[in-house]
Image 1 (cartoon, rainbow, N blue to C red):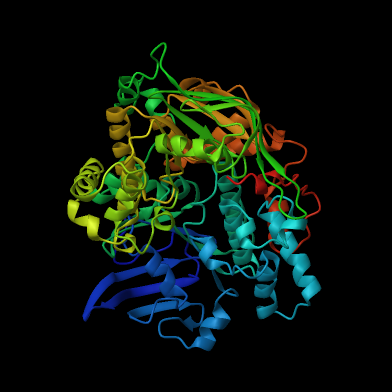
Image 2: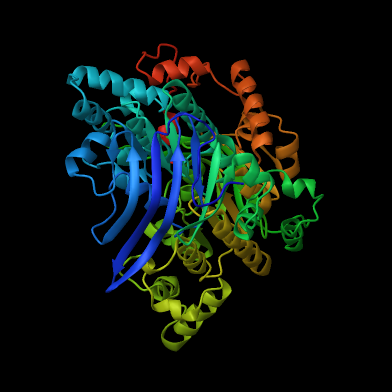
Length: 612
């Protein structure tokens, strides 16, 4: 395995990017804090270098330095060479020419990277017109081609949509389309698939592979998803506390890791099929059974029979039916996983269960309350017994309140505690989620992502709910933090025995927690069964397609699974006539380099409106 001092490409060709002795410091409260220390690496044409590590290890800081996007309180030393350009301390004119044209970036959070007052089509066209002599009409045509390439549903309509009108996964696809617009020599992908479901993630990874092969682009991949690393990376660089602790080829790092930190990272990764292969003897399986979820006669906390959920009419837009003919029961103490692609209606169901969207048909009972035509006064009782854990705790916590007040707010609003009693209960909740009591006085921005998610869990458990709805609670966390949060979740669920609807696109995480799995597609339930039935013997073609798209943290196994998935797509298994799928590699690559896509068929747009 190569020395961490210089990460050399496997190819003998002239590197696109050469980084030497990169050091980045931040000036905070009169002190220089090192963020990156003596990092050196190279990326050759057509290669993928993945940088992995926990939050705060220096991954994104390294990427921002390449484009000159670090804040003013930073100081950069060393050398970053892209072609003939020296990027460290480069002029604004040089950086403007390089950005987009030679090096492009896919940011982690598209909602903050996209301008909310312009349509997505305008923003893609703006990149094209700023760097080339292109008419507005031609730029719009090219923008539409790019939206088709990244599989935006109903691209002819979505090109005129604003970012807030798209789902999280769709916004990420717009960001990727924008980054690919000018066929850059180097693509910096900072967590490019965090918000995407497994099937779209697989297509985006395939698209990125086609890009690097067709136009000989190098890719710097920053991610916490080791399955994505196994799928994409030629070489891996492991960072910890700003330093490179291990590097080597993908096969070397996965098969024979040398550093203890690398070994810990790999051990924290959930493996699809791992809990089943252990024959039900894993900690997760024992925890699931210990709460009695299979007990005969357990109370039904949630009952939905042939329900339909609609988004109300707005202006000239008619009411939209996001979920139809959906059936599911959840018993006390049971964890049910709800999986499906973006726009399938997963989050819509979660919102309807707490009365944020109406059930317009069927029978729906939540903790004994009929939710079809429910009165507002009855919703208070429902919300006393149902809690939500959100995907992004940073945006769900009030930034102006200390986290202790956020945790205690439900108790205060429902009149269950105040004064010293409230303070004691907040401290007890902090103890339950393994956070120091002193953190009650900190604000959300002063905590890490994992700590904020623990605060979100503590707040959700404040009222001792009978039902917990967890909507993608770990998708934005690194693998080691995710493992700790999942262990905490299992411990609390085992102790308190609440029912849980766990919404996720990560089937490996769902396998760890859930004893039953429901598969949702375009608002319709296509399959429901035990964990073993769904994962080992799926009955529906769509479920098979979902499973084939899950990346696994093993380069050899992932290569085999990718070939199987390509065969599934080629055979049209699990694909409707109205779905957009990529054709051959050459077809997608031709589209990337500017050839019009003729064969793409946009779907009916339901995925964009289902709200999941």
